[in-house]
Image (spheres, rainbow, N blue to C red):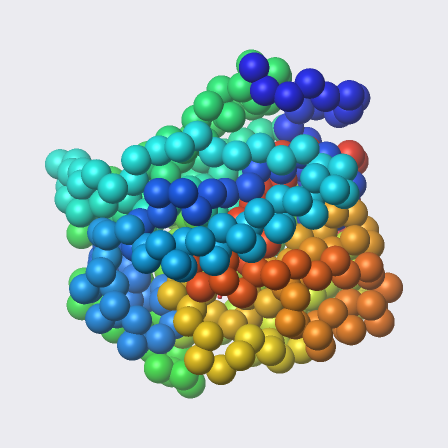
Length: 364
Ligand code: ABU
C-alpha cells in the first residue's frame, strides 16, 4: 500500500511552505466537470462574463481540448517534481458527473479533483478535511480518501471539520458582489463554520488566513480552537471584490520573505516588520490578454510552489516574476502552466504538501 520511503520524519509533516519537500499530492484533470452554477460562484469568480458560461455549460465535462492542454501542463509539473526528488501521489479516480442531493440542497454534478489544496489542510502531522462552501465540491474529499486512510494507517492524524449543511441559511440572501472600490463584502453567513483549505497559509506556529467568500469568521474560530495553543491564527486584512483563497494574495515563501499581491493586501501584519521580514511585491502578471481563465484571476502567477527555501516552481511566461524571484535570492524553475490555470489554478492550488523535512518553529 503506497510508496516505500526512507524519510525519518512522520509520514505527514508540513509546518510551513518552504522546508525541503519530500512528498506531495498533485490533482488530476481526468473526469473534470465544469462546476454547475451555484450562488457562491457569483461571489468568488472574477468576471461577470463567465456566469453565462457556467449557467449554460456547468455540470458537463470540460471540452477535451482544454483538458488535454491542462493535462500537458500538469504532466510537466509532475515531471519536474519527480526530477527534483519529490514523491508525487495522485487522487483516486472518482465520478464527479453524478447529480446529488441532501435534505438541504441539490446540485447537478460535482467538479473535479484538480485542486487538492482547497480540500485538505495539512498542518503539522494532521490532515484536516475542509468544510467547503461550494455545494458542487461537497464530495470532492472522496477522491483523497484512499490517500488519507493510508497516511492515517502510517501514523498521521486525520480529521474532518464539522460537515456543513450548505442550506440557503449559509449564504446571504440576495447577495450582490461589490464592484471595484465598494466596501468588500462576502457571501457566507455565520450559520456554520466554512472554509476552503487554501484560505489558510502556514508559517510554523503562525497560520495566516483571510476572510473570503469561502472562509467565514465561524470557520476561523473553529480552526483556531481546533489547532489549540500550539498555533496562532492571524487574519490578514485584504481587499478583493471576489475573495477566494489566500495563496494568490499573501504567501510567506521562506523565512524573511513574504510575497504579497499589491492589489489585495491592505496591511501587512506588524509582526513581519518587527521580525525584519522583506515584503516582496509581486510584479504585474504577464498572462496574455484574452487568455481564457474560468476559475481564478491572472494573479495566479504568484501561486508558486516552494521545493525548499530557494527552489521555486513558477509559471513559464511570468518573466518579470522570474527575474524578481532571482533578485530575491531564489532559484526559479519555470514550468508551463497557463493551460492548467484556464480550468484550475496555479502550482500551489494543484497540489498539497504532505511531508517536508523540518520541525515546528516560530519565525517571529
Ligand atoms: N487559490 C486560487 C486563488 C484564486 C485567485 O486569487 O485568483
